[in-house]
Image 1 (cartoon, helix red, strand yellow):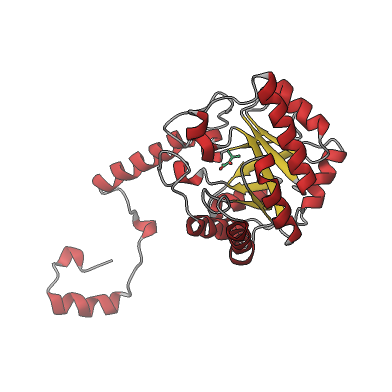
Image 2 (cartoon, rainbow, N blue to C red):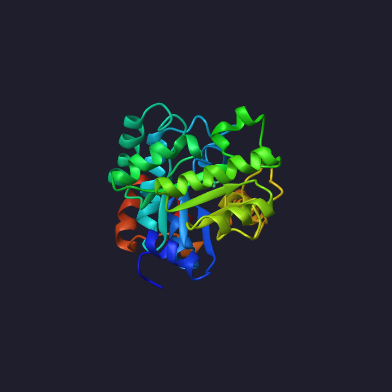
Length: 289
Ligand code: KIV
């Protein structure tokens, strides 16, 4: 399919039992490749704080950073649905903040939807954004912006009470008008139950195959993030190794005078060069091209 994917396509995919693929991207060339690869949804995740900017967690990420990266992704992605991730402090303090910042994502970066973290407690915000005409993706389970409150990157929904809360969160987001829902680091059986209980598509990350779709952080699945690899990540390539080898080969060739070769150089007309060489008294062996 070459036409632009909309939230209606994403919802229809669940109705037709078609699994949805989503990956994160933060720049133009990656977004281009994703369109060529047939990815359905691209998330400009605030994970960029860690995997692109090298922060310890996602909390220092700002709206301005998100807008800049999202606009670059939008320029590359003509087919995939692009979702901009609302960073910490851009929607938690007031509804006004949430509306202004979600509006910026759409107006300045051209995203198709925004994502925000939180279930029941965010239902009013989700509803307000949907009323404004902005499509919203929810995010429940392990929500990285609350990592300190969780006491670290831990699996969620493992007790009866916690599982009930997650089901309530999912239903609340569906009722508030979210078009889909990311479920992160939740037992597979519970994520499957949530997916069967609600009508909107669930996109799992560390939530098993029972979700309606899957999302991974691209730097994790390409082997481009050095710090840690969560248990739920499958590494599909070792791009770091390919890049490191290319960089080492370049350094080696520069040091040995093998790069640039003749085919990488620009020439100058012989008569012109003769004049310059004459003026600067360039030695005979350097006077020719
Ligand atoms: O920021 C991000 O990349 C995310 C995914 C982990 C879902 O929120």
